Image (cartoon, rainbow, N blue to C red; front, side):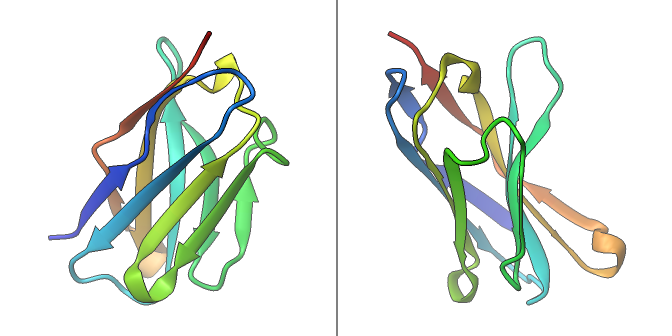
Length: 118
């Protein structure tokens, strides 16, 4: 089965930076989408950023210009560089992988806590 392992979460002050990593393993189609979602307490899970294997990207408006998604296709690893962090960025961040017909194969990481606070 496909497994996603995340790392890089933690506590950071406003204006600080964090870099999240997510490595996928298992049988993964070479054409896929990897991305990051987040869920804050009392809120719905939302897309933060995603990147296709062709390196097309999509960002939430709230993070555009501050966060950068990147990936290593050979390693099936995706990264999220988070700069100029705000308290509103506090959430559990989840790595996601989609592939296959209609992107029906859908896998999630365990989540990593990001807390932006003084």
